[in-house]
Every structure is written in C-alpha cells, then in structure tokens.
Length: 113
Length: 114
Image 1: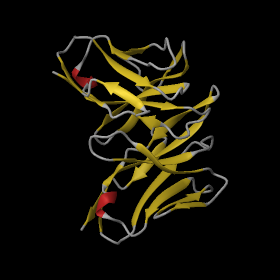
Image 2 (image 1 turned 90 degrees about the vertical axis):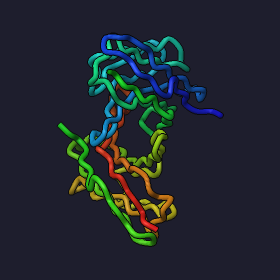
Image 3 (image 1 turned 135 degrees about the vertical axis):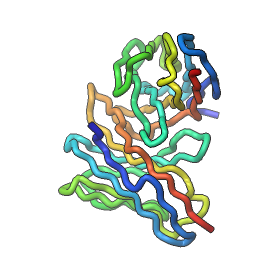
C-alpha cells in the first residue's frame, strides 16, 4: 500500500545510546517532516525537508539529526538518547507546496531508560 | 509561545449529540486550517480543512466554522457516534520558504458514549 512507512514500531534505548528511526514514502512527495507526540503537548515539529539535500529545524530540534539523500527516505537520528526523548515519533509527507493533506506514518514509540 | 490553542482537553458526548472543539490562533499569517483525527496506535489523518476566505465548510457530519476577526475556528461533529471517539487536533500552516509547516494544537480526546 502506498503511504509512509516507519520502522521500528517500538524501541527501548538506554541513556546515551544512538539509533536511527527510519521513514520512507512511495508517493514521490517532496516535503517530509518529523514530529514528536507527548501527552498534553500535541505534535511538535522536530525537523523537516523540502526536498533531497535540503533540511531545516523545527520547534524542538535539539538532540536530533536528519539528512535527505533521496526523495523517498528521511531518517531521524538520535545521537545520544536521553530520557526526555521518550516519546512517540511520527513521520509525515506532503506532495504540495503548502501543508495540504499531510500523510502520517503509524509512528515509532521510543522509550529511553 | 503556543501559536494554536485548543480546547477542551477532553470531551465526553452522548451518542447522537454534537461535539464541539475550539481553536484559537495568534499569527495572522496562517492561511490554512486543517483538522486531524487520530485513533489509538495510529498516525493522525486529515479530516477536514478550511481556508480563511470562507466562514464554514461542511463534509458529512463534520463542519468547520471559521471566524477570521476573532482568530478562532471550531470543529462541530453532528450526530456523534462511538466510532468518532478519537483524539482531534486542529492545526494551522503559514508560508515558509515556499513550503508550509503545520503547527498543531495540543489535542482533544473525544469519547462518545453509547
């Protein structure tokens, strides 16, 4: 099925470990973004990309890195995990020049202990 | 600074009733106001959206009302059903380098009782 695929679905990390959350879309969307969702906080933008080779910071970028080498993939890297990064992470993509019709993945639930 | 304020945090409505969720924004540069619906364990999905040049948009049982002068917009769910039980997010977008990023409200957890 076409859409946004996130892996893994669940992950437990120890403080200080690094990992990469994967995001892939097969809709040829130019625009991709990462959000984190915390109880009572809504969805907050971490990083976004407007095309291959172009990325920018969102509202809460600290502790996260991204790169966009292809149109399809937009991985999110945690360099040194901290308990404050325990959250549900969503990747989203959009084909338009505006934020119309974002398609979200099913999320990655990350726990940092 | 929270740019989109959403209320209430949670809402319980009886089956067949009207669910109303309100949002207010501060930045007049916002030009697109979508609502997303999220079921447990799933990602948010676009439900309905409105531009500031119209005051109301209706799709089935879902209606957005928009008040540009008050910088407020709301979602009305008519004849609410148990299957509507979900978390609802309002959002707003503004131009940024040719693309718009979405700013979300904090969400409203709706429970429709049978």
